[in-house]
Length: 96
Image (cartoon, rainbow, N blue to C red; front, top):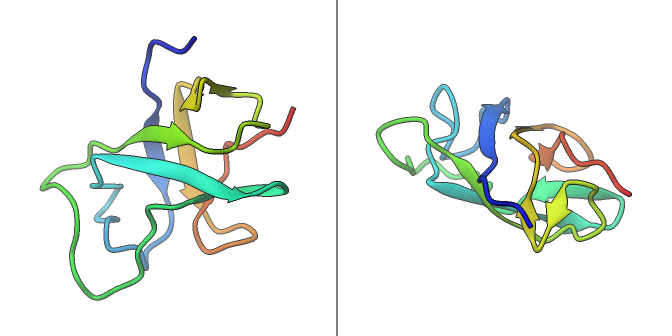
């Protein structure tokens, strides 16, 4: 079982309300479909969201087929979010 919480080390999705020179959401959820994993916390709006500092972690991962998933938590040290099949994908996703 994972005992550490994965950080969001990079987010290149500039249209996300939580991205201010890094992800300012307290935690993100990784969701998506079987062939890719996306950031379910992504919000494309003019409202500014998040904390006053970059601190994001992966709170939950719904991609049970990802090799880093352990009890719905991300076992990777850090993840990167960016454009993929969707606007905001988990670029660290690796299916088993």
